[in-house]
Image (cartoon, rainbow, N blue to C red; front, side, top):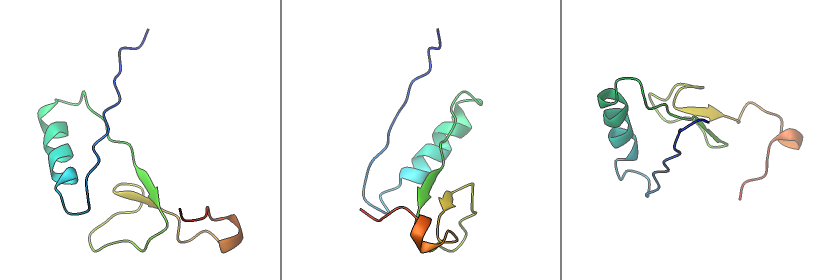
Length: 68
């Protein structure tokens, strides 16, 4: 059986989630992995498609998921 755990960090934009998670990954010696979220917003400066977020803006409107 797999003993993996799912940890979710939820906080407002700019609260430091990414900084905390990057530090935890650095300290974990490769035992923590980050999932990549999908978004329909425009990429922010410095974000890399498929690394920071999976950007869905290139998908045509009829097949793009609706915003909630």
